[in-house]
Length: 159
Image (tube, rainbow, N blue to C red; front, side, top):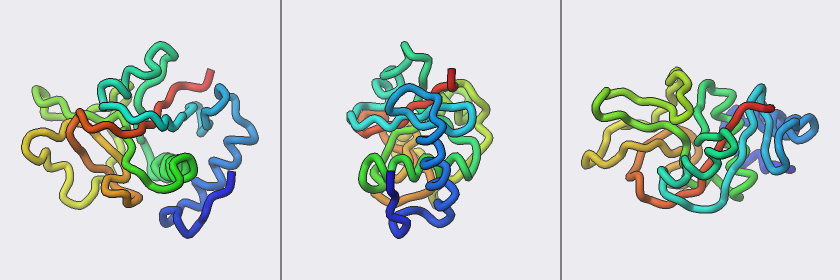
C-alpha cells in the first residue's frame, strides 16, 4: 500500500510505517490491519451509527475506540488509504445522556481526547455519536446525528 505523504496528517509518517508493517506481519483476518493487539477494518458501506456498531458484533468487533495519538494517526492513514481521502468515518464514541459521560462502544476506558475546536457541543441536542474527519478534513474528533450514513472502522482483539 502506498500513501501520499502530502495528504497524510502531520506526524503521520509513523502511522504510515505502522500500516506498512501491519501488512507484513498481519495476524488478522484478510482485509484487516493490525496495530499492537488489535485488528482494524475500514468498511466502505455507509450505515447509521447503530447499524455500523452491529455490523461485526458476531465476530466480536465493535466500532473502533481510540486510546493514543499514535493510534489516532494510524487510523487516519488507514482511512486515507482505503477511502482515497479523509472522509467522515464513524468510530465508537458515544455520549450517554443519563450519565453525562462519553463512552467507547467496546467498553474500554475513555482515556484519549482529540476534540475538534468547539466540540463536543451536542448541537441541537442531537449529536450523541463520534465521527473522525468531519467536513473532509483530517484530524480532530467531532460528533453528529446518529442517523447520518457514513463509512466506519471496526476493531477487535487479534486472535
